[in-house]
Image (cartoon, rainbow, N blue to C red; front, side, top):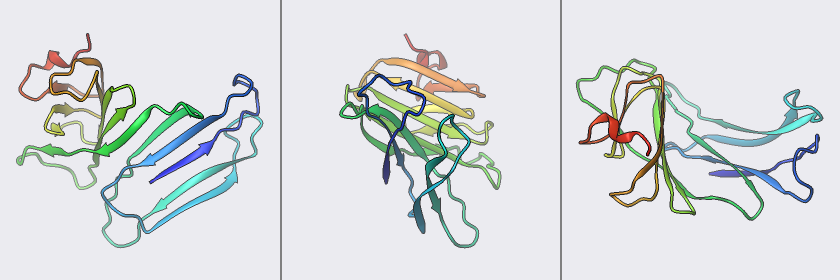
Length: 178
C-alpha cells in the first residue's frame, strides 16, 4: 500500500508555488492486521506542532515481520518511481541465521528507465543472492543499473558495513560504478 503526504513548509524553504509530496510505499509479503493514519504532536521540525504518522501492526504469537518501506519525495506532477517490487533474497543452505535476523530487498523501477536494487540484512555474516542477480553480504547495499536489460551497465553502487556486493557469476569488482 502507499500513502501520499502533502508537505507543508513552515519555514519557507521551498520555491513559491511548489507543492511538495512524500509518497510512502510499504512492500511486504505479509498482510497487516491494522493500518492507521493518525495526526500527533511533534517537536521534530521548527514551526510544526503536529505531523501525520502511519501505524502498521500485526497481531498474533511468534510473529516475525520486517516492514519494508520506500520513500519518494517529489514535486506534484513530477513523480519519478514507476513501480516497486519486493525481490527474493536466498542464502546458502549451510548458513546459520540467528533467531532474530531480518533481511529484505526491493527493486525500484524509475520512469527514466533506471533500476535500483536496495537490500538490507541485520546479519552481516550471511551472504545473500538478491533476485538471482546480486551477491550481497552487509548491512545495507544499493546497486543502480541504467535499465532493466540483462546487460545493463551499473551506474552506482554502495555497500554499508559489509564485504560483498557483486554480480552473480562475476568478480566482486564488477559492481563498482563506472
